Length: 131
Image (cartoon, rainbow, N blue to C red; front, side, top):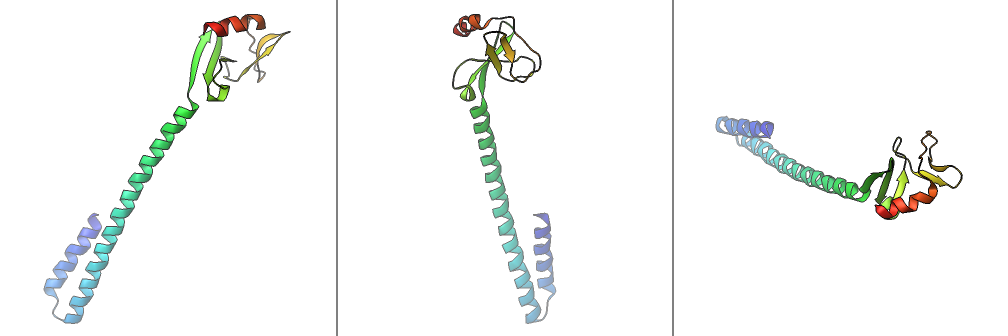
C-alpha cells in the first residue's frame, strides 16, 4: 500500500499549496479515490487470504481422502483405503499398480511390468489375514 500512501501524502502537500477552491475540490476528489482504492485493495487482500486458507483446507481434505494404509509382506505391497473399499489389496511393489490374482500364474502386476510374486494365490488369503 506504499504507492497509495504516497498519493495521499502528495495530495495533502498539494492541498496546503492550493489557492483556488476548484483546485482544492479536485484534490479532495483525488484523496477520496485514493482512500477508496486503499479500501478495495484491503478487501482484495482479505479475500486472497481467505481463498488461500480454503485452498489449504481443500488440499488437506484431498490428502485425507486419498490416504491409504500400506504394508509390505512377502515382497508384495498391500494397500487399504477408500479406493480399495477398505480391504487389503495386493499391489505391484515396482510400478504401484494393482496386482492380479490368477489361479494359474499366481499374483502378477496388472500393468504388465513383468513383476510376479512367488506367493501362490492360495497363500494370499493367509497373508491378508495376518495384516
